[in-house]
Length: 165
Ligand SMILES: [Zn+2]
Image (tube, rainbow, N blue to C red; front, side, top):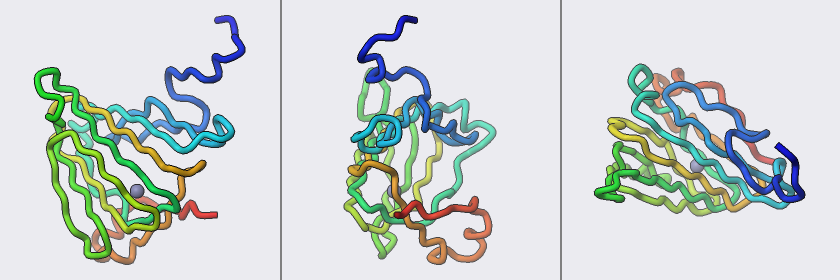
């Protein structure tokens, strides 16, 4: 394909800076931040498909954490007969009180800067849906608090490093 002046602004397929997700997670369609385009905030779009969850049901994989900037977590259903039917069951923990929210409808979660949230868990995926993460900062930032979890859960978590400069 011939390169044009502005083709750098169109994305199709996983772009540099994006990492393929592990089985049981979504398939990343886009991962964009200040390293990909100078001045861009952090955006990630993932496709969550029942096929990816058959052998790898998602379990709790992220301990409670905070971000430096406001985050939007957009869960979009794709049922043409009911756009609010998410086709999955998502649980999100909010605040230091660890308030539990479970939803099966198209839902956007607004996470203020420095607000403790997570874990985030996906279950019962019955149809593909889209997950869009927006971080209102140039790069993804996170500080994790695994110590909040009981030891049995903490031991099952993958190693996580804070992204905090
Ligand atoms: Zn988060």
